Image 1 (cartoon, one colour):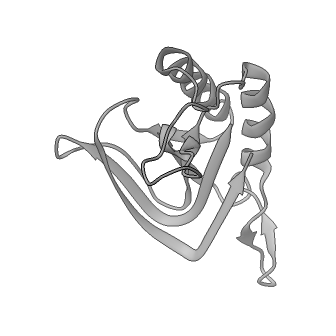
Image 2 (image 1 turned 135 degrees about the vertical axis):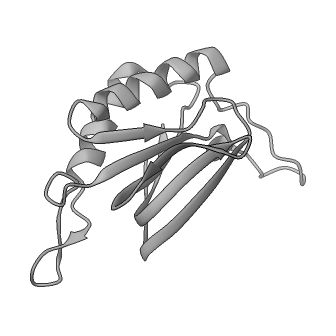
Length: 143
């Protein structure tokens, strides 16, 4: 599983020019499921994400989590995180989870996060437009 996490002042996702998810202060998360990923990996990474301390405290140190700052999550499915570009110029996605199974893991991951933090989502498999005001910029990759 791969997560690209961007600390954001605000972010939104739209489908067919209609906003389907939007947040203010929090993380925009691009979620990719790999061929070998399981629900256990969702459980591990959802806790890591929720408790990731990358917001500044009163001393300017990155010491606060989403819960500490009342942050939100916008989670977008993105199988292209598993692009393999080592051969040729056209990426292959053989390491990505099959769509039906990936959608299950995406939904499960979002459900786990929503137990502790407000979560907004994109639409799995849709052609989405994502807007972001990156705070920092601060971007982290979790695997």
